[in-house]
Image (cartoon, rainbow, N blue to C red; front, side, top):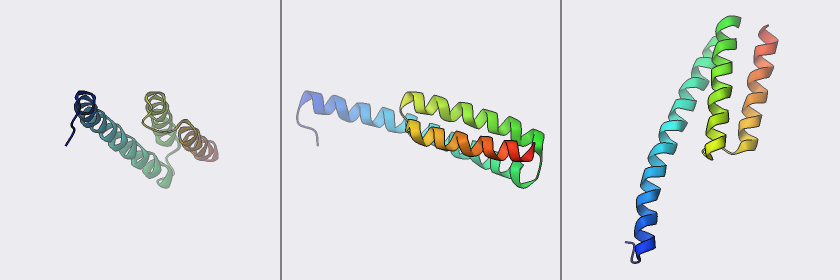
Length: 87
C-alpha cells in the first residue's frame, strides 16, 4: 500500500495508463491478425489496406510510448516487405 501522497497519485496514474496501454495493445494485436490473414489469403488489396492501417496504428502507439520506436520500425519494415512481395 502506498504511504506518501505522491505514491498514492502514482498508483492512480498507473491504473489509468495500464488500462490505456492494454486497450492499445489489444487493438494492435487485432490489426496484426487481420493483416496476417490478408497476407495468408493472397489478397493483395486487403493486405495493402490492412498493412497501411496497422503501420499507422503502430506509429501512433510508438508516439505515445506504448510501443518502443525501434519495435515499431521493425514491424513497419516487415509489413512493407509483405505488401511489396504481394504487389
